[in-house]
Image: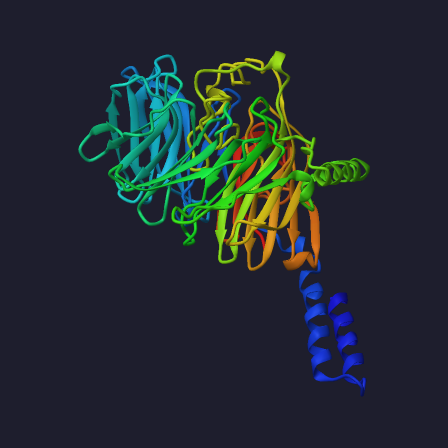
Length: 550
């Protein structure tokens, strides 16, 4: 209210100034009005709905699958058995977080979940025996509208180590490796037939991304020559039958190596490839971000940016350290030397807007080499793959998709994890339609340590406002940036409870996170011990809160 009266007084003073013309008034109003509108922005973050489910200490975690405007799906292993089958629980919630359907799915008790996908209003769950790479695969298709599910089981003819999975027009698309070489397999759900897509199986090539497009096609992104000088990106677009429509080969700087890369999904007419790069071929720590717009019929410019060139990427560090890094990087650039600053950055996702592309990355530190363990199965199937990130299978750094299914992570039976990943901050980078960086934003994390490398933040870009959020133990950290950074607000918000006089006794950091949902909504989830107000008793719950941002 004070800001309103301040605005009124300012405009009154301007209108009584006899020398003020209409153009000056308009310019002044354009400057002052955004400040008025963005005042106390963080207070506009609301939590319109909450879901709770009783949770015991020995229960498995829920896997949360976003169905966009159709709600959420929750999946977990119940540790119950019927006729030698393990029973998996699936709960569907609408956007108000009310239960719309619950069902149980029997799965071979030797199988664990490898990943999931949501396409055409159905969810698809992949199961496989973790001790039998290339053996029987169970693909369970669930239709929440018809309230039915169908299970497909097949054995690949080759020993394919799965790294990617998506669905397109009743075809399941599997990416992976046969020995050390990439391969692509299509499984026709209607005909129950599998086939290997030709042309992918070749040496010295890494598979970076497999992603569906909005026009009924899918992309396969490859990087060739990781350990040689003749490096290049290969992007191929296929139809739903696995027939290649177009191939684009993009040469890379011989001195640089691509670590991670993901593609956009042709929501816009242009396809963007964005990822991380480093100097040489022996380091997994990135020196910067690269981007390129795919154009098979013209020469394509690959844009390389080192991290010191970004305005806010280094904001998780102390000001003196930032100044030192930037000054040293500027000098080394001026004399033609490689910039020395390196950091691990997970390529999380690309959002497409009317103005271009928005890239989300998260800065992390891996456990020391002596404490690191790898398993034969990588983190998980999701639409956003990158070789070292939480968003997909990788031939380079393996962890199971969910901690309770990993032999080297904390589980409900007391297995101790060997080391922690440390997460430092998120970077949101804005690219124009030519793939050039126009601006960047960031959010510094609190001290976050996790047993597995997982996404801990997300962002929403809505009506010109950018909201970046992450979750610490009992609070949500929210940063809201107005257009042109005219106003920046950051504050901590507690997840709201259903009963106002109850309190959060404790919450697990490991099992809590936040994700973009649809429009300007996100959801935060985790496991809490709630202290009741009347009798001081406590109860353990899994919860989801719906969050609305400006």
